[in-house]
Length: 240
Image 1 (cartoon, rainbow, N blue to C red):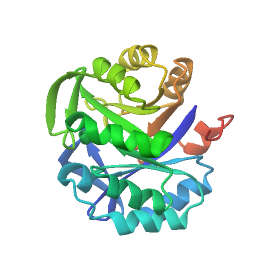
Image 2 (tube, rainbow, N blue to C red; image 1 turned 60 degrees about the vertical axis):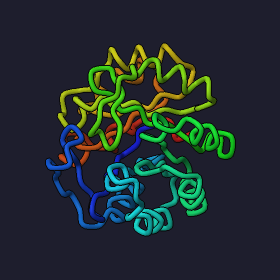
Image 3 (cartoon, helix red, strand yellow; image 1 turned 90 degrees about the vertical axis):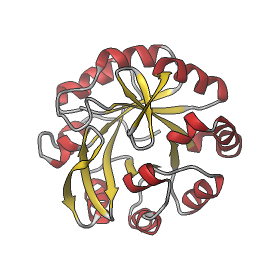
Image 4 (cartoon, helix red, strand yellow; image 1 turned 135 degrees about the horizontal axis):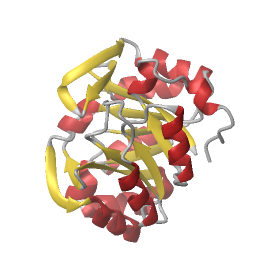
């Protein structure tokens, strides 16, 4: 299972939000690039970057910063937040981003998602952010009437190979992932499933490994020192 240290960027800074609430942020660094190189130095196999400004606005105001991070690091990066056009995807892939994550647009614009999959294949992942089992969009500010498990089946039919599943109510709370929901999602699909939200301890990581997930994203617990990346990476496989 691949472990992805998370770097959430807002206003050019590395931050963490509580349950996706933009008014509840904690700034961890003024230099996200320095954070990225520190995770690489600790032998992270893959980075997970989210442009929080882009997720909310659909704009790419942090693009230059993200490109700079890609240039400073030598490990793969998956990026989400505001990915709503083929032009944006192309610009990030050309800048060295290994996998681009489509979120809101995967719900609101299926034609765009299909075009992206057709052109970029496995370089496209879809983020499923759920609140009480229903998909949330627009930087987690809106909850749809679409059930997450139904969306999973639809995405697989379209040809998506990797999904990131986030339980918003667990995110940033340090209370552990929603194992039951993750188990149900993973069993409902043959796609690669990456867990996000609430990963707090070595025990959480071990439970996710037992579910045979492709990966897990870890954020707040790393930044608050609840767990250390080196401890988690002992014996882990490198990115596929």
